[in-house]
Image (cartoon, rainbow over all chains, first blue to last red; front, top):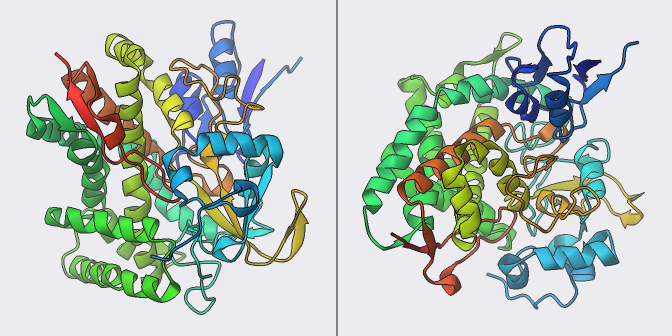
Length: 66
Length: 402
């Protein structure tokens, strides 16, 4: 599973990088960015899902790439 | 003040300055949500109030049909000659695309998480200084002796304004946000001292540049051009107005909640790690800010016959109580894990100061409960709430418990 942020939808609400700082960071404008390639492990998927369910803009997507 | 008849039915005659709404708007919104998802009023020259999360979300994200030319409802409409769209009187909040993105990009780096996190030690020191002033009295006013000082202190420092002018800023905020029902002529007169003050501050910063937001705005360049003077002026006014009583309200309402809910207070005192999650629930449940839009052209929208220049009251606090989106929406759940609240708005106008507001709210609450782990309302009838589009507790008579 891989997580990504839709940059068109992200408005910098700042929830993802507060909830899951191991998965998300922010850029110069305060918009959320995924750290690395966004590949999720059994350990990180839960916090990625929690961040997703807290994003007011529905900008976080968790996708099965298989 | 104009003498107005009291509201009989908020579905057809809403008024966000009506005493009933000011005292407790939540039952009104709950009732409206069941009866009509979009309420109407002929007051203020006509306006609509979507009560659901879906309605609020649709309007907030639609800059094609709605303009942000002005975001505070009043009796007049902003004259196009005053400061036309897309810049508006206070960019970027009053700006429409495409100019909006330019004006917003200027502000965001100054308010990014890393920029504001650097302010934490100063904010903590400010909170402690005011708690020291309160001392160890049993009866205190947590509104007028604490909450109101935090954001005003931070914004003053951010803009680089003289410390002795704090009372003046609070007066400006009061004029802009709570005088919304005054006549257009009175409004012009009321705004004059604000204009004069900001002009003086700009001149002082031009003569004595320093490391603050005002100097930054005076020097920043967009495509090799400095900002127009009215743009600098507007963004400074916006920072002052949007930065002060919003956060002040969130701090005060959260303290009010803790005074009424000793179990929640005890949990926060005993489980400091809970604070970030609790902050989001405070923001959902006591979201202070509603914004406004103007309808661009006559149209049918959300099933309503909207006319050009009708107001839309964007009730983010109402959206946050919509049971269609939040299970047990009317319950404050301090450890609510899934919380897509919209206290800072939605879409391109998301509150640019949200990182700063969260930081102030967290530090102000942490410091208060660390100094006073137990407190209650000493006079529940003495609690007052602000009027208009920014809702928050003002007078907070507390008894500090040993």
